[in-house]
Length: 129
Image (tube, rainbow, N blue to C red; front, side, top):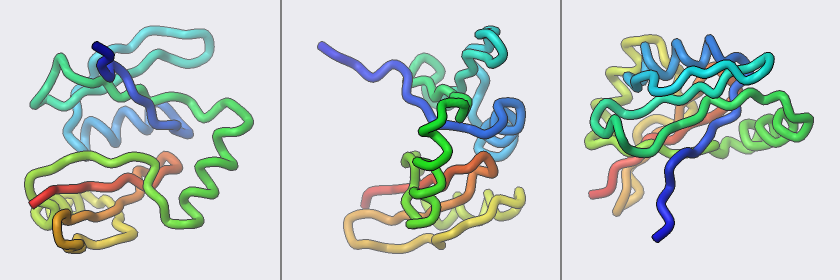
């Protein structure tokens, strides 16, 4: 059986990303290993510390920036995180200074919102009903 172990999000600055993803979003640092001029730097949800890791991957590859810029220009989130209550999470994150490009919106079977992770990505929050 194949399982998802690590997924990644391209970030402009790993230290800035680590601060945002831990201090604002509430993830916990799992792995921090030097890897040349960068780090193998992952975070996990405290609700699932042995679950899927999110790699804060440097946007160093030449294709990463145009790809990220195109997604942001079109308002497309790079990835999506599950929450229990989107409006409540939006309010909590706004209180921490997080900027949203889409407020909590009810699409019937799902409620979503989209925020700027300050590292070059739009990220979606989603809750199914």
